[in-house]
Length: 280
Image (tube, rainbow, N blue to C red; front, top):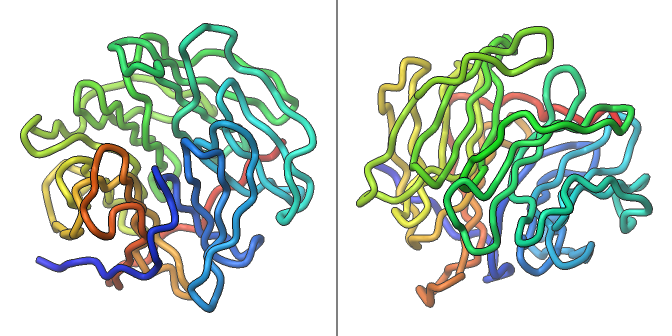
């Protein structure tokens, strides 16, 4: 069992959604409840772009720039160093905010939500098409969280932190179908949060409240556990020059453990997959 190393100061209140992309120079992540998009520089310092009240996740755009999920939708920037210039609203429901998601192999963007108060069935999973069209894919989810795709793009892994479960879905013509349980995390161990899939098709998932990142085989077998020295482990990604650096974000929301809110990392043996961009 390994332990992740702290690689930054405490730089977030609720760090989330790390993503590696050479298009923006390396690692980006969000300070979700402070509306910040953060970039890790080579010297270990962190740059910040503030996009509003909420910055729930960030992904590169195929045309350049980035897309970031906000409180009620997504915002698009044409340059990686600039603030967003336009937005797409996903919800008008009171008490709902965006939370996590990811781009799909077909270039669309999936954005999940939750109720501000965390109430069960208060969230949804939305799909944003490259032309800006939107629709609800899953209704009545609790805390919509990590989303990742298998190396051959035939499967999607999706975490709903409310029931403590990761599901797997078939990808059929760009649609997500046949949702079924993949792994359930015992309540006393924490809840599944952000996740990433590597080139072997194994799933790394942050266990929030449990101070761990767990690695599961495509059959749902627990293969490895990475310990993180703070309980609020929120999300993970694979990056670095060879995509073999596992980066882990953490939160200090409700937690005063030293190092909560910092970024952590460790080297792993199996590389990750290049990030999928949003085609819009």
